[in-house]
Length: 255
Ligand code: DAK
Image 1 (cartoon, rainbow, N blue to C red):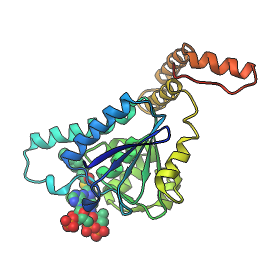
Image 2: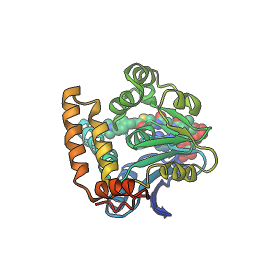
Image 3: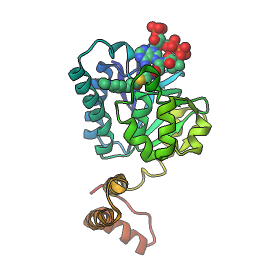
Image 4: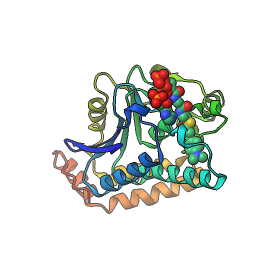
């Protein structure tokens, strides 16, 4: 298997496991990733950690050896499939954290961008280098990178294809933290800052924020009011407010 799904405490860990090709996203890896997300969605993990096997790479991008000699319609279909697999991270009931343990190039950085949060080891290198191959990003990079770092920085990175180190990635907001020590352990420690909260509220908040840059402010505010009203209907909201009044910690049940 080129994608492994394991469990560490209350967290699911998906590991791209093709270190001999720097965990490149072949068609087979994308299919296995899709299946791993099925299993994660059906499970009860509080968060998903996504990482790469080995010390060298998170993921060196789409498998370049598979990208040549195909018809335009096959390329179009495969780009749509890759986009759809990565977009599943938004639909998971729990937030996700990319533990970037080395190179995150092209499709690898696009996978990290599709996660809710990103941590990178100090030696990590990140880029969207597709332009150097005569291509442009195909798995969401042109859409998610500007939403994360702004249009000006995204254009500069996509048109130059240049490589960022972890410090610069942190400075421009591409990653949330530098991971000291083991990247998966660091990602789990990071996930504990939100995993105590109820999954329904976490999902409603993710949905609201995701839409913020897609719609005009007045529509976004309406959506927020609707989702906020939905949050009030959950048992977790009743429990959270009761716990506050009773000066105790809430016991959320994700309902
Ligand atoms: N695909 C396939 N194999 C890869 C690979 C990749 N992306 N990256 C590395 N490998 C393989 C190498 O070929 C080598 O295998 P062997 O030659 O030993 O068999 C092995 O991994 C180790 O790599 P290196 O020997 O190159 O290792 P180095 O430490 O010297 O260099 C590196 C590490 C990350 C700087 C270098 O490997 C590198 O530049 N890799 C390629 C990075 C890159 O350009 N990634 C692709 C970006 S383009 C689309 C869908 C998606 C996309 C486009 C279109 N459609 C469906 C339309 C997106 C495309 C991309 O992601």
